[in-house]
Image (tube, rainbow, N blue to C red; front, side):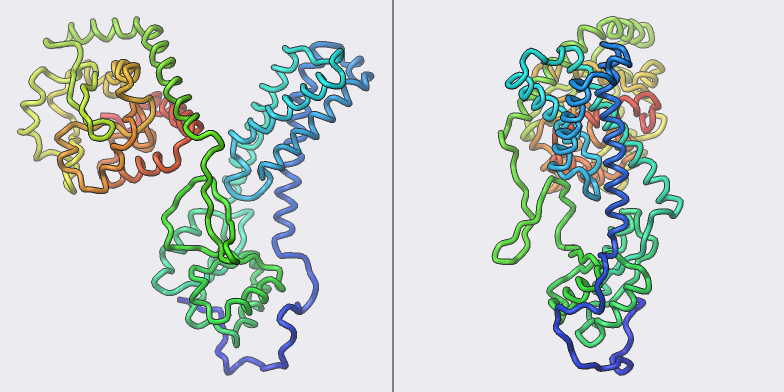
Length: 483
């Protein structure tokens, strides 16, 4: 591990000053980046939200009348102030993932418009904006601001891939934690260089050398993996603080848990706080209602497709239209999952003869082979397009499945589960899920499947379900990872 520290013998010992005394007064080192991010996001939001408010009103009245109307201008300024205020209150101008939280962005914009309507209704009921103008403004505001944040984030990622908008950082950790910690930081894709310091060599006598290296390299953030391993933690903290450098504690003992959280202290000790929603359980019932309504409408609207597939299956091979297989679902209960038949009638009996061709040699849980001889010609098309899964909409309608969730597996696969695999059986199985949009049949390592399912369970939200459904459409259009 390369060390930035100079041996103690080479240090010039000086009379110690007050711990809080800085060498000189200066702005914190990431001030430029903070203000650049804030100004970019704020200007983008103001321009796009202004357009969303102005365009519907110009269609209602002439452009000249709009600019001459103080009432319209005052109304727009008030709504803009409310929108920016609500967005700021949600912390959506901060760094990291929060700046492109599209759900909170949409909520902030909607609440600002609603608050404006309430104000007008109380103080100026005769001047209320027409419902159509209000509705168009809300929809345009949400679409434009989310699109703007998306393209800003996309541009930022492209620039960072090309080496721009990156900065060096220093990682203080033990040699055994170096690889894991470095890997985590590299995933952020925003550090041009990661310099390493062995926490065992860092003490009060050479902190000054570390600070000089920080200034020389232009480091704005320093990561420490184990705060308890620092010999003089308060001395290091105040030295970094006086140098205008951000200190970040990177706890490698915690597994990634991507839920909304905040840092709270108990007697000065930091804790990570995960709060439940204000109304617990409401979002789950919204999910169930959405599943029921969507599956019912989809069955009705796609009935001609069902008929065409049924005719094609009958003309191609003998046997039933539907294939019903016992699958393991919620709480390891069994149910019959319905699919359009894509194989010959005796496919289950012939599987034992093909086990040696299984691509999953690790644990054998997922049975996947290339060019399965049991699949019919029509079946290959149905599998490639995933149209064979359509009858599972009836399973969703009956409450046996959900639109999004871990895929239900055959009894053969579940019998080979390890204990930690059964966590995926604690939620309703789904027609699609993270596994499907992350590679589908290309993923043959079941531990990776369980990781994706566990990630989905830990981080579930209505927004995540909608995102997976949209990604599923894209995956189906390109047919990636299907067999």
